[in-house]
Image 1: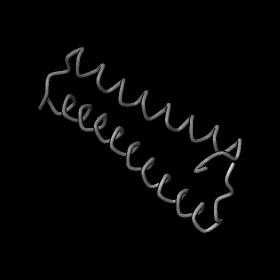
Image 2: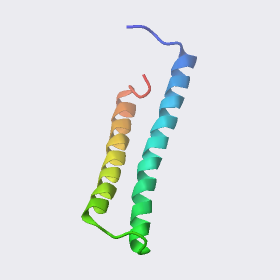
Image 3: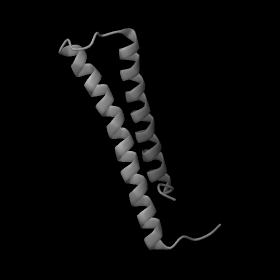
Image 4: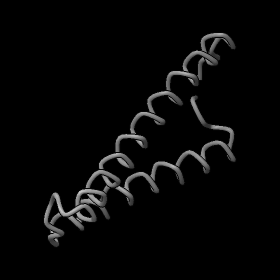
Length: 78
């Protein structure tokens, strides 16, 4: 196993964190926009749309759990 330069490891971790924040933010934004559209009457609250919201939130939740586990194990960004 190769040892990574601490500066490079830090940069890699920073990029991974930014990517994760972006992905989770996208998922939450999709869910929020759909719910707001249904509440405002702009879009119909269909089963498909509600399932899309549920899937987006479940995906965000999975990413957050993976992050928590990897941070606890010290493997985040490695």
